[in-house]
Length: 211
Ligand SMILES: [Fe+2]
Image (cartoon, rainbow, N blue to C red; front, side, top):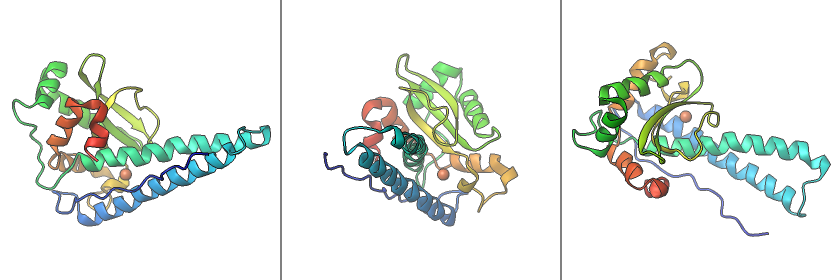
């Protein structure tokens, strides 16, 4: 069977953010590295089962469970990379008056403020998950969605443009569980708008390009 290169955890220079402490980020990087490790481990197990060219009936329960878990771990890895890449030290909450993101938000929502209200409100939804702003490649519009855990609710073919982790581990060291709104404002003050522009301009390559 073909030799497969395991996924490597990326590193991110994200100390010194506004309202999100270095301790939070270090904890979060460790969690992310766990997703990378587990993705590789599950993929190895699956390859092992496939080694003889078939999935036997007795292998099917284990195979099914591995595949289900892979969805969780794989999306956990990838969404964290989008999230870390769309923040930076010295980022900001203003995309720029004439920026492509501002134009896309105005075209789809009438105003940036209304787009932000929609996205931030998704982030305040009860439950464990992510607020996602996608580009719909079929019409070029922005579309905000809730993803439960890491893998439930991702829209097939849509391109992530802004990704916000709202699991409590993203802010619990800095804010109380009831203060998610304060974390969301802190997140907004650290956005890397250049990363979003890359994702909007070259959606097919954006994931790799911002890595
Ligand atoms: Fe997270």
